[in-house]
Image (cartoon, rainbow, N blue to C red; front, side, top):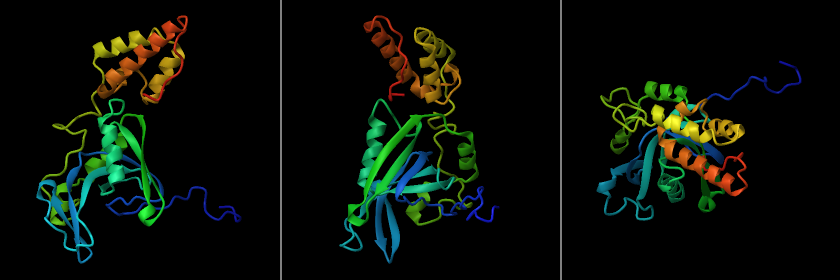
Length: 255
């Protein structure tokens, strides 16, 4: 270490051992790894009381603190580099993620990372939900999920969802019997179809397309993106035809 350096160049702040993610000021980058559990949260003696979605209490313990609707899901926190539970009571965040899930250009928020931007203080706090380009889940994140199992339903019992005592745990979106969206890629027939479409485009467009999806070939494209990729390429081809048959050479933010 140079005597004029304040910290070593290799220094990195240690990750928190907290199992619950707290949104910090600025960017909070996450990957959602499970379907959310839905419920209601009340407070008594500074401790949360959680109820299932269909079991909303008729009134709150403290009339000044109304019961809040919440989502709770397992996420990968990129800043702390660990699996955590993220509980969301803020309507702005819920509405932003819900809007993405219903948008045909984005789909369920399992296929891409999300940045939640927090700004302001107190009652003036605001949240923005920004999706990042679709990409396949890093195997390291999946491995971390399997090593740190979590039972979200334990929240309704005020128990530790990461306790080793649970016989069953919340499924990840990549596990057998669930959506299996991370490992499913294009069939040979679909990959050939996409490649034939790309053959009608500039080489640079095809390379940029694959790079934007974080894949090396059309055979690695996630099944969930098949229609979007196909429609995007076909749209580019049509645009090229209307411009004196010039080939498309740019990628829109669709993909």
